[in-house]
Every structure is written in C-alpha cells, then in structure tokens.
Length: 422
Image (tube, rainbow, N blue to C red; front, side, top):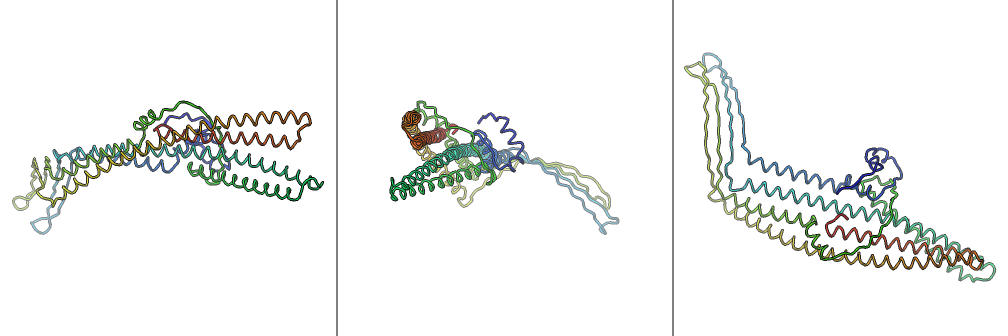
C-alpha cells in the first residue's frame, strides 16, 4: 500500500513523546491508518510470523548443504611409561546428503508455501485493520455531529418549554401542555447523553486501534465523500478471486500440504550420503617415542528403512487428509466471499439511493428555511418559528451526513470484499 505521508504526520511519528503528553490530537484518516499499520499489535504479530516463516525456509535449505565438523583432543599419560607423555588428536569431517527420498527439497518448497501463506495472512490483517480504522474514524466523526445536533435539539426544546410556560402563566396553555413539553425535554436530554456516550465509545475504539493512550482525545479531521459510479458484481467477484489474501493463503496452504505428502513418503525411501574424514593424531611407538599419524577416509553410506510399523503409511494418510481439508476450506471460502461481495454490493447500492433521497429532502427543508426567513423579516413568523426551521434543516443535513457515513462504510466493505484497499 503506497501512501503519501504529509509533514504533519512525519512530525507526529518522529516526535512521539510530545504526542504521548498531549491531551488532544487532530488526525486525518490517512494519518490514522498509517499509525495503525505501524503500531497496531495485530499487524506487528503477523509481521513477526512472516519473519519466522522466512527463517524456516533457510532452516530447510540447510539440509541441502554439506555439514562439516572439527574435533580435537589432548591427553596426559602419567606413570605408565618411563616419563609422562602428552598425546594429541584431531579430526575434520565433511558429510553431504546426496539423496533423502525427496524430503529435503520438498521441505524447502513446503516452507516457501508457508511463507506465502503468512504474507497473505499479514495482508488480510492489514486490510481488516484499515477497515476497522475507517469504521472507527467515521463513526467518531459522525458521533461528533450527532452530539452537536442533539445539543441543538435540546436547546430548541428548552425554548419551546419556556414559551409554553409563558403561555401557561397568561392562561393561554394548560398545565398538561407544560408537562408534555417537560417530558419531551427529558427525552431529548436522554438522547443527548446517549450521543455523548456513543462518541466516547467511538473515541475509545479508535484509541485502541491506534494503540494510543486511553486519555488521549482524537479529533477526526475529515469529511464524508460521495462518488457514485457503476459497479459490476460479476467483475467484482472475479477480481476478488484474484486479489483476496484469503485465496492466496488457502492456495499456498494446500500446496504446502501436497508437499507434506512427499515429505511423509520419503521416510520409506533410501538415504544416500557421502562423507570424508581426515584424522591427525600422535601415538606412542617403541615404548616412549612419539610419532604423528595422518590419514583420511572417503565413504558412501546408504540407509534404507525396511519396516517402521506402518508409521510412514499413517503419516501419508494424514497428509492426504490435510490436502482434502485445505481444498474443502478453499471452496467454502470462495462461497463465503461470493456472499460477502453480494451483501456489500447491495448495501452499497442502497446507500447510494439513500443519499439521493435524503439530498432531495434536505433541499425541501432548505427551501422551507428560506421561506421562514423571509416571513420573519416581514414580521409574519416568530423567532421560535425561525429556530424550528433552522433546526429542521440542520437535522436534514445530519441525516444526509449519516447517509454519507453509510455510503463510505459500505464502499470500504465492498472494496475489502473485492480484494482492494478498503
């Protein structure tokens, strides 16, 4: 994933102690995603798994190279001869496996496929983290707007209560009207408190994804964007089969399982190795005389297991079952991906239609506000009428923002479902 990191984000990354002490920080969506991919522990854990898988390849390849060893010894012989004598010995050996039933090369291939699978799992984790950050970021952005609109509704309801109480004082409104308005005020206050709690919950979720301190307050810096375009379901499904990391993971795991069959079969095949050993040692001759004796040996060793109690047979059968399970899991995943794409596709279409509908409603309330403003200027409408019209338009704009939120989340889920960047 290529992203341009703006200077503000660079400063944020390099001067982390200042961030840690801050009480409030403003972040764009790109900045939040970059920090999450850098610091989120799920991503870091999967990154370490990739490194471990890569080292496993080197471990398997080591069997293809010759093994060399050196041994040296010293002994001090006392009271056996006329004088005490020291003896020395050394040995250098080199052993090369020539054939091991295909076990070595298949082990390398299996670990290479495991490495590919671990990379796919890392990509999947990153994709999920990006989607979760987008969800949390836009949820926090929307919840802040929700708090603002509920605060405005609470203020407007309080104005209506004051007006009803004034009418009640002059005998133009009943006590029942006052009680109803007080009940309405209590309801909107409760809704306001609920929106504040919702904003705090979204804040905590985003802090957790970015691995920030729980006391740090994030101010999302961004807007909802809408870009309607034609979407083809069949094309999206084919794209998903090509790009989804789950497909790459399961394909690699199936290939690794096939190599595991050959590795298991190798236990019943011969092992051929070549060796060369060089010996150098001092020895006693003629009672107390020391001489050196150097010689070397070259050999070929063949080992072929005759009977292992059907151990290899059982291993092969288990490996074959692993291949079948990997294939079944891949087929199931393809079906699940198809359903995921279909659901995301329908949600995205619904979100687009909802935006169009609410946009028209917002235009109606905007026009109504213009009419009320003209009447207010002419002295026909009251100040409270004007406040109601402004609040109605603000609510319509918030509903439109909520539809925009539904769209960006549906779009992110659809992109993830098709294997692209959420």
